[in-house]
Image 1: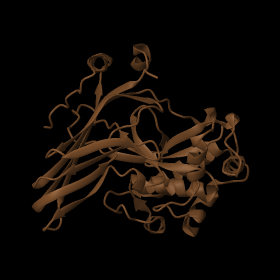
Image 2: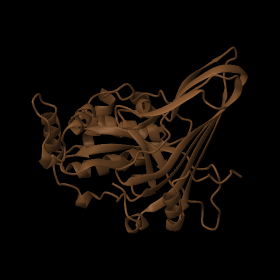
Image 3: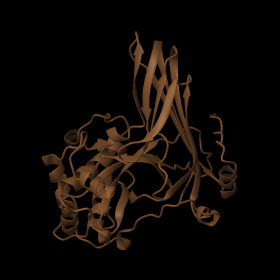
Length: 337
């Protein structure tokens, strides 16, 4: 359902540009790619315009909704090239309100685990009292299971255990785990790779947002609770008196935990907070592999490539957004400096 201008005026308005450029040492004859770089519509945000641009031009391209409802785009470039650029541009409004522990349902984590288990039982199609029905039951049930990149190991169980006191409210558990991951693990860019496993993360006690999201999800799943991985962006602000530079924003990741009676609650352990209207959601899934921004294969005689990524999340005024909504045309992104 579209929002009125008054409703949109209470949100934050953004022009989002995510540019990825690959440079190859030898000619590439064909590139096949799949991208999750266009934001979801709904769940506290409204997308006004969005488009994916491929250079050189794609011979074939398209978009569909994947199993999780994310916007999954594909493209095929069949002309020779030594450089491939994928640019995603969107204009959107975020009206999401931040969750607060005191305003979340005071259900204990043990009760929540029982409700979650019951939803997945044969013959159960969901309970309206818990805000679940139809396909949502499958989403909750699936989010309790181990996935390719999130193993529920003994190391994970040991890390999680101190936060799961008997009959403790789930909201308090979520908040404490978020704070513990933030405080006990160091954020260190380059300290892990996309393939780092959780036992290795817990051994070295440092990582990045992907790792911290995976760890919080694993802790929840270790106790029979539903949690999933969320990919997106967060607005960054420059130091006081300094202009915001182009291309300095970045992709971000956090977790979402299902709270019976409260729905999916998004929490960011990297920044120790529940998400608010400074966050833009691209998509969600079982772990990073379901929503990696860009993946694919190329055909070339060479080996290796260089990668450049630039993300801009620039705030717009309500009048600028209204102009976009009225024109229904793609808003050009301001050029990079």
